[in-house]
Length: 253
Ligand SMILES: [Zn+2]
Ligand SMILES: [Zn+2]
Image 1: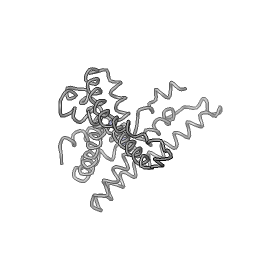
Image 2 (image 1 turned 90 degrees about the horizontal axis):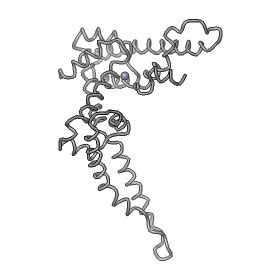
Image 3 (image 1 turned 90 degrees about the vertical axis):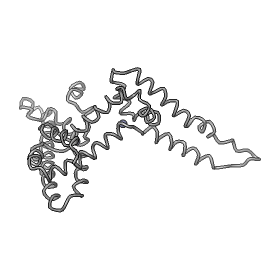
């Protein structure tokens, strides 16, 4: 098993805060954002990729919010725009159908042509090397987690002590556990299920108390763990922390 994946997996499972796979994902994302904003942006091999792909809307936003290497970002954007333009603009200009007249009659060829250009645009807009790299890294992490669970007793204990796996990451672990032997899968899935049963129960109680706190009779009773239960539930359901931090909840209130 690859050591470079085992060390971050061990680190992520050493903290008792939320989903360990979300932490691994966030860290991988940060590394790749830094990579694409770093000297690599000037390397021909990287530029061949980014000229073709650009970045997905989410990662363009994250690159834009970063204040480092505005020049690199500008140069990358310039050659990407040129590449995209060379790919589609000529076809786009030829895509408008000729008006049907008495002599020329109707021709429905243009319909397929228009959807094919639209498909090409959609495909290119969705391309993103950061997403691709993160997906690769997550695939390795998931494989390593299942391997370590079945080969490393110390890791098995750590696994039992994390609070939960968010639902999208639970699903990834379940798919990988289908590749384990029946006995290994029995232990792994039981541990997963136990965690997530408790996580559901805790969140359901906390969110209920959150709603009951709006009753004037409960006004002076303590919040307990309920104050950030909406945001914690959102993170549990979506594996995404972007807009679900406690601060943005406070701003709205
Ligand atoms: Zn997660
Ligand atoms: Zn992306």
